[in-house]
Image (cartoon, rainbow, N blue to C red; front, side, top):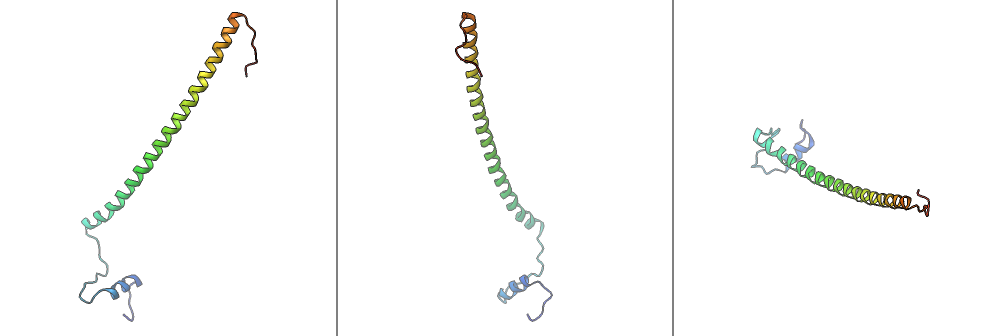
Length: 100
């Protein structure tokens, strides 16, 4: 084609088609075709969302577990020191070292 009102992409596609093929200038998608075309994008987005949600839940679970482990250790230690301090007080023993 020497001159065309069409964009270069459709013209290039037209020039590469065999002479026996039909070239649609503006092929509108029928409702079913549009649904099928969009469904692949939707499926991909859902799959990505599912992976990211799984990762977020796993990370949150790990962080919560670590926080609970740390809290348990700290509370156990604090209670142990309290029991020791109360026992020393009741027995009349002075503290052997200052509590910080």
